[in-house]
Length: 85
Image (cartoon, rainbow, N blue to C red; front, side, top):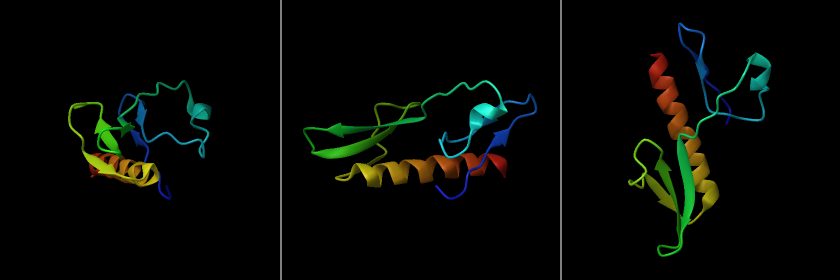
């Protein structure tokens, strides 16, 4: 992840993709919530990405977990970026 967007609301709360690369706890108390899950589907023999707001829907899948993680981060970052505009 090369760019990190932190959206700060009028009430001072912030939203971003969590990363250990930035000491977010230094900004204050954290409330970390999952936006998605990457899990292996044994029947399909593929990794699947699901968003927590619609866990029944597979939004991306690939034979590689790393590919799913990259897609997940890029997609969630794009969502955050679109909130700023």
